[in-house]
Amino acid sequence: MGKEIDSQVDPRFGRAQYIVILDQSGTVLEAVDNSQNLNAMRGAGIQAAKILADRKVDVLMTGHCGPNAFTTLKAAGIKVVIEQTGTVKEAFDRLNRNEVAFTDKPNAEGHW
Amino acid sequence: MIISVASGKGGTGKTTIATSLATVLGSSAQLLDCDVEEPNCHILMKPVLQTCESITVPVPIVEMDKCTLCGKCGEVCRFSSIVVIGNQVLTFPEMCHGCGGCSLLCPEKAITEGCRELGVIETGLAGPVEFVHGRLRIGEAMSPPLIRAVKEKINPHKLAILDAPPGASCPVIHTVMGSDFIILVTEPTPFGLHDLKIAVEAISHLAIPLGVILNRSDVGDREVHKFCVLKGIPLLAEIPHDRQIAEGYARGNLLVVSAPQYIREFLEIFKKITELINGSKSNLKEALS
Image (cartoon, rainbow over all chains, first blue to last red; front, side, top):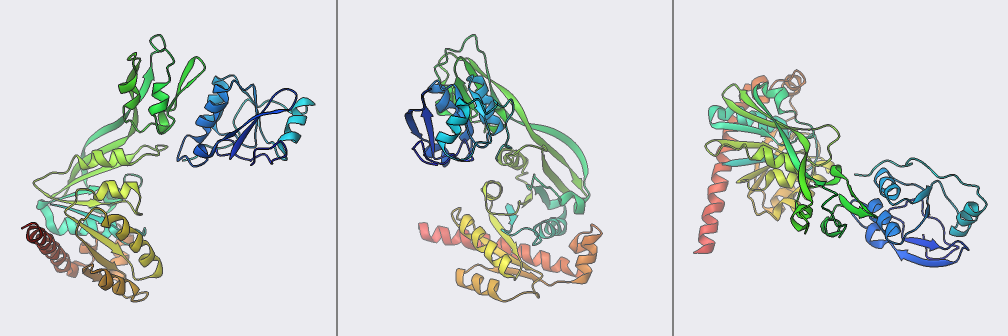
């Protein structure tokens, strides 16, 4: 929901305000402004996934991920962790401690 | 001549009006049910259907051996139906509006057009009335292209009556565009008025003459009357909340069949519409001269 490491994780992937990208040490490399997709009529998840693919991101941690976003992320070879809540840092720490599993399917319906 | 029957609010009696109007006009009429998501004119008209035709929209098919992953297809697509990811091109055919932009812009000519079925169009005869309706494929989200296909069946030698979907969004606008007149059917309730206002606002941009038919006119309040006077919208007819009509409707009978005393009323509605169309044409001529 914000640009910082202490910002809350938006439950929505495609329509999150910002996508915070961290390196392996947990340093914020970039907070991508996703407002264009936030207001998109359709295809927000696909475009947000493309943002990650273009930046060669390895893992996505989010709340919910829809079917089209998931297909796109999978094509880009990006692993997906769903059902994340709390702050960006808390989610990152869970990943570092191997407390999370990568999902093999989306956990939200498509939107029309 | 093309007359559309729209409403704003659902369940006000669009289909009741459209089917009875077509029926009293008989062999000079053609009824086209443009509510392709939930067509229901056939329940009252009981047509004998003669043709069934599948309608499709073009969707992209990518030949990967020709593709250079330049990404132009994804940049032009407003609906994210095609996107280049790594060394793949993903397509989401269910989101495609069929504009053809991606295949047009592909420098390698790597995109050909496949098709997605939108639904079917069926035509036939309901007594002397020519009948057309579209049925959207279950699971399909985009109705305007199918509505346009239904409208391509408009017979220019007939009085075409178009039964529109409820609301005031794209499917309604696609139905009423190009009409000579729009009948807005509403009821004299706060809900009827609220949605009528939205419909009038949306439709007024099309500069098509319109009139209101007030259904169940003896329930509710007088606010729709006041609105029509304020906006200068002619009130074409008032149909009371009549048990005879309701009972007939519940059995799937046309209003003018279950309550034949209304045949004259419907002919009168048609006469008023003709006068209003001619009036607006002569007004236009005066304005231009």
